[in-house]
Image (cartoon, rainbow, N blue to C red; front, side, top):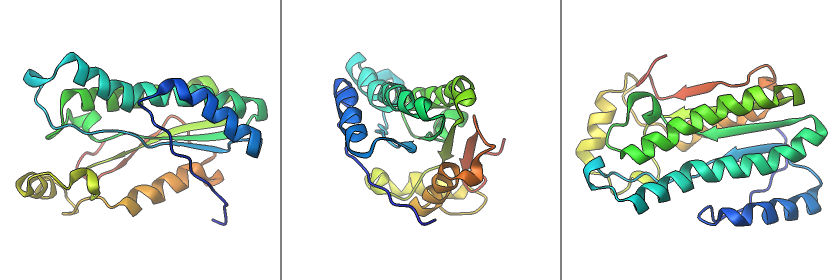
Length: 197
């Protein structure tokens, strides 16, 4: 795909900045064609030890920020009757997590639901909303994980490896393209067979 793109960094802990940042982008580029919601933390904490502040931090960062950013961006997409939104979810939302905490699992389940909600609400504006649902991916997010956890995940995966960033990026690229123009509300599994719908 010969596409020019630019990315912007947002501090999603500060949801109140979203409207201002999107306004700045629109004032420069006049439009946003694609929104990729790829944000999150993945705490590995059992439910017995999670405080209300920890719960709220994960839900706000992983779920609320995606809602408010999508809400802000799609109002510009609706004006043009065109847009693509791709959310990054997780297989944890389907299997109840492996080693992750319940706040992570709940936030990713919420992303799946928001994906379907926005897909229905925005379809008449020619806006496709989908999500990718990867399994454990070989990134810095898992650098501190115990090797026994990673080995266990690999042993449960039919393709016998972790996902790579490229595996996820290729799926996001497809869903962001006009090749996926008749796909909306889909949660695309990218997990080497770890979970099969």
